[in-house]
Length: 298
Ligand SMILES: Cc1cc2nc3c(=O)[nH]c(=O)nc-3n(C[C@H](O)[C@H](O)[C@H](O)COP(=O)(O)O)c2cc1C
Image 1 (cartoon, rainbow, N blue to C red):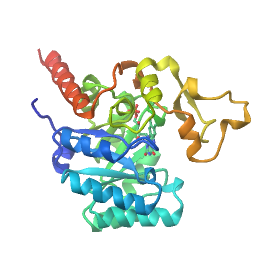
Image 2 (image 1 turned 135 degrees about the horizontal axis):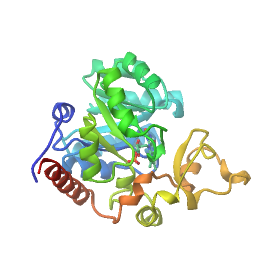
Image 3 (image 1 turned 60 degrees about the horizontal axis):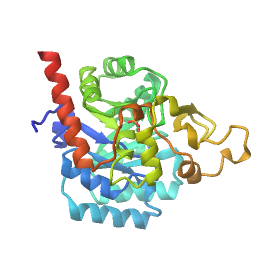
C-alpha cells in the first residue's frame, strides 16, 4: 500500500500520519506494538499501568518488541504528583519518542522532554488552551473537536483545525470522529499533520476493552452517544446505554471506576462496523484514504 505523509509524520519516522490515541483503562502495550508494526504511532496513558514499576515493565516490554516510535500520555491534573514525576522520569529514561500531555499545564514536562530530545503533543479544545500550550513550547497541538471520544470539545473540525493552524502557526493534529480513511483525508485537507483516532481502535482485537464494549461500539450510532459532564465533572462522550440515570447517587463513583463501568466513545461509532486486528484496520484506512484522494483528483 503506497505510503502518504506530512512534515510531522516524516519527522517522527511514521509510515502513515496516524495516531492510535491514548484511552484510559483500555489502551495497552500490545496496541502500541501492533501500531508500531503497522507504521502508525500507538500510545497509552501512563496510568494504564497500575504503578510506576508496572509502567517500567511495560516500557521494557515495548522496547524489546520494537524500535519504532510510540507515545505515552501523562494526564497531568489527574495523576498524583509523585506518580506523575516518576512516570515522566521513566519516559525520559526509556527514551519514549513522544509524550502526549493532557489535563494541565505541560510547561515543566516540555522543558524536561526537550532536553532529552522527546517530542511533546498537548490536547486542546479551543484557541485559549492552544495558545497556552504553544507558550509552553509543545511541538504540536491536538485539536479535539466535537463528537470525540473521551473529553471532547464543542467546535466543528472544519473550524477548529484550520483556525488553530492559522492562529498558532505550529503543527496541528486533528482529533474527533476520525474512524476511517475518508475522514483522515478530510483532516489532512483541513491542514492537520496527523489524524488522532481513539474510538476506532476500541473495536480492535488488541484493545483491552471488554468484548461487550467493543461490540457496543460496532452496534452503535451517534444517536447512542451522550455528551455529559455528569460522569467526571468535565464534558465527555459516553455510550448512553452505560450511563446511569443522572439522578442516581451511583453516577459519580470515585476515579477509575467511572470509566470502567461507564464506557466512553465518540460519534465516530457510526462508521465502525467490525472488530479486527490493528494491522487490518490500518490497511483499510490507508486504502480508503487513497480511494478518497483518487475521487477528488479524478
Ligand atoms: C475510552 C476513552 C478513554 C480516553 N482516555 C483518555 C486519556 O486517558 N487521556 C487522553 O489524553 N485522552 C483520552 N481519550 C481521548 C482520546 O485520546 C482522543 O482524543 C479521542 O478518542 C479522539 O476522538 P475519537 O474517539 O472520536 O477518535 C479517551 C477516549 C476514549 C474513547
